[in-house]
Length: 210
Ligand SMILES: O=C(O)c1ccccc1N[C@@H]1O[C@H](COP(=O)(O)O)[C@@H](O)[C@H]1O
Image (tube, rainbow, N blue to C red):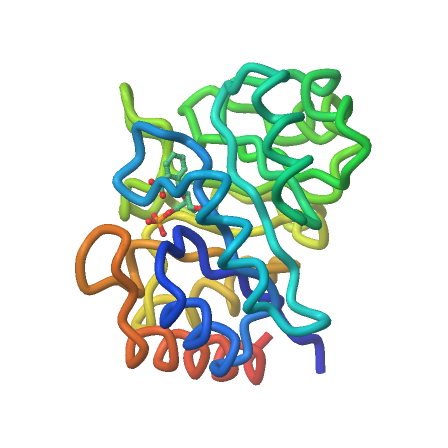
C-alpha cells in the first residue's frame, strides 16, 4: 500500500509540534513570512526544530523573501526543506544548497505540465488554492479534477483540507503528500491536537482507498 506523506504547516507552539509528531506527521512547516498570522521568527523556528525527532522533516515556508534573509534564516534554523510559496522562479529557489519544493497557486489559467518543466529541479510541487491578494493558507479548497493524473507522484496537495475531506482528496488525486494548516487549527496559528489526530486518521482511510 502506498502511504501518503503528511505535512502539518504553520506550527507556532511546542505543544503543537509534539502533537504533530505524536500523530505521525512526516513533516512540520514553519511560516517564515512575517505578514502571516502563523509567522514565527527564526529564533522561534530554531527552538521548535529542537523538538523534532529523527525522520521528521523541518520545512521553512517563504514568500518572495529577500535571498539574504532566506540565507540568514537557514544559517540559524536547521531546515531540511525550503517551501517557496510566492512568485519565485526556479533559480530563486535553487540558490541555497537545500532541497526545495515550489508552491503553485491554482490560478484559472495555470498549465501544470509547463510548471513541472519550469520547476524540474524541485523536490515536489505543492498545489494550493488561488485567491487574489492572498499568498496562501486560505483554508479554501480547489477543484481536484484539475490535477492531471500523470503529475500525481510529484504533487503535494494543499488548500482547505481537513479530517472530513482528506480521504476523498487522496482517493481522487493520489498525491505524493498532503499539507494542511487551517484544517487542524482551533484559531490561526493555534493547532488542535484532536483535529491533527483526526486528519491523520483521514489520511490512513484515504490510503486504504488509493
Ligand atoms: O499559513 C499561512 O499563513 C500561509 C501564508 C502564506 C502562504 C502560505 C501559507 N500557508 C500554506 O498554505 C497552504 C494551505 O493552507 P490551508 O490548509 O488551506 O490553511 C499550506 O501549504 C500552508 O502551508
